[in-house]
Image (cartoon, rainbow, N blue to C red; front, side, top):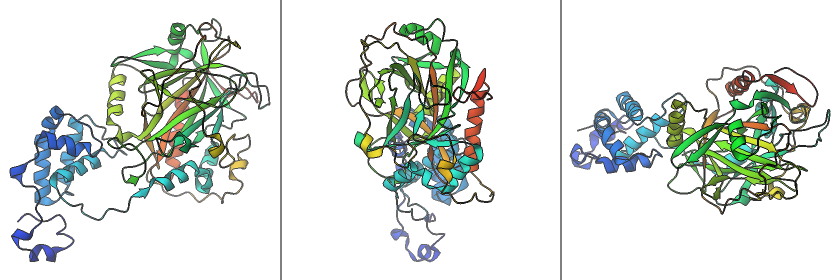
Length: 485
């Protein structure tokens, strides 16, 4: 008799039960075919086709035999799971849940109970609230303070600001609105971003414009253009201001549901959180390009209020989505493919590129929508940030003594798009209206909490910021007139 998976914890039951009473695991005579393998892997968010299922079937059958003989937790089952993931081209690097998901698919095919009771599902509602209010956590604030980083919910992404002032002739406020319920835009709340500097001082870089790449979808193909090339295609090139661009860097910490959570998201897709950026350019008008792994979208924003930015999916507007990277193997494969073709892509990176336009009353704005300002504006007093970091930490407990931290608490996010929510309108009459002023590129990397934030997360922030420093010809503040990357 093959041992039951729970026999190790209840040996007397295994001995007492007669052969006929043993809970039946699926026998080798009814080994899963390709269709069942597709279904089992699909239930774990791993989308494969029948041909791929047939290709991994021998290894799947071997893993099932090992599981029947020695238990689903045996190391030989994990070994097979790693090779199955490798054969499917999945990401098995440290920190991913790929192998765990493959083992879960094998358990599904085995028809076996889990080795131990699963904890009750985490609440998406409480996780969403705690993530959007991370500034209530003193330890998190102290970690930021140690590195000089600044948490904000509205980021000042200005092209023209007066010396020593919060005002200027071309200023923009930018927010990230994450929805608790993907189907309900009114459920959106401002996400927290970590800037390398305060809103007021606004440390920026000057980076050669041709280092910024924009990606266009042409059918099933992705085509890469340098920013100057794209500007020429759009008729928005400047003869004097396109050699370099202003670059600012930040990390967006957004709530993204895990597989063990329960909440409101579409069935049949990996858990995700829908989001949109908003931008308020005050008295000026800007042409905006957003660029993510799936391609770029264009919009025109102007004075009046915060205006939402959506993905343009075949002429329909759709919110962007944030998923835990391991749940979007399709996007990870796309990233791998495009990088192999020499393209500069990143599944967790979002470019917001502001191109200044002339103050021409004839320009028609995109008007794609506005955020639910009354419900989420200035939730924790950080809507506009500030110059003095003590604003954020004055009520915090003293910094804790250094401790050994085994792993980072923030996980990588893959950016995709959600369901269509209406027609997409770029705007009109913007051609050949470029102002001879600099372009600003806001570089945002998306991460999500999987555990307590640690110094390793701060190290990751610093590493990403330093990588951009290496591409810059200058770094400093145009506001306080300080230089130095």
